[in-house]
Length: 393
Image 1: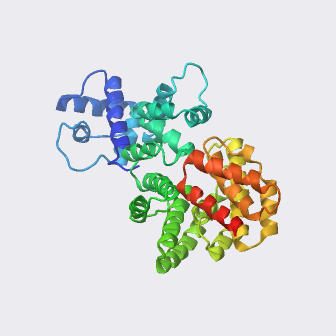
Image 2: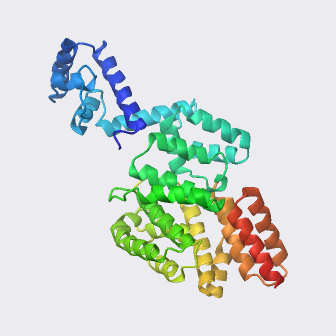
Image 3: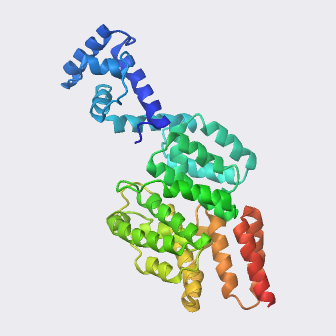
């Protein structure tokens, strides 16, 4: 975790409070620090000098940050396995208070999903929940990272991501938030914002410890933007770099419901880069092992359904209409989760419209048009007008 992030600073502040509670009094003098040092050594067997404790509590001015060793041992003194364990507890406390948990259930994933359903149906609640989330940074982190709602991009929901960045400004957090903000700008066809968010993504270095999904998102954004502005050199360079990083993420992709290739393709699908799109589909890494983190079965069902839609779009672009049609016929839009359905249904109906040449055309046109206006995604509104003009010709 970025030690300069507000989230880390808040966690350290909370750790200090817990240490004081365990110690039984305020820690405000050199004597207090010496006594605490002795008690830590006696109770844990770990040695942390009184001088280090004085720096940790700000009794001595210091420009250096507290080492991982020290915060891990201080967390252990408070009864946690390490600072990461303390952070998990800190997070759960935030989640419990945010969701006003009054029972023994701790299914925060399901609670978040229920919240998504509610705010997707109420613009007023969308704004109110955002204000409420401001007081619970860990709850906001959990909510956004597990349930990023594509259907609400381009609304006040974008503010959720901007405030998320205040507390999660490490490289992974930046790619995640700016990636979705870029997609929002793309769907609104706001080229100035697209450029700004692309620059943020480009300036954020990818690292080996970054999760599969934001890693793929970074390359997807850079490839889509290069295509939008006609930067052939930049596109080719980025795609070659993406292929190198893909090798690194194969093992991780085998343990997830969403692969690196899938994450890149989600953005590249908006281009006509047939050769590159085909590469991602043919080299898709499918899940081989149990997800390394708990993911409910319905999320896997959503990802599987989305993959069919992406393949249908891709094969239509390749001119392989029979394969595209087969994928479309296998899609069940009801399997797509809350906050995702409208967005992916638009891709589905757009492809149906390209392939439909019979009496179903009017019905598909109506569904596509209504969804485009409901979401107010300018990109799909333009696509609809283009398809209608093609039919007229």
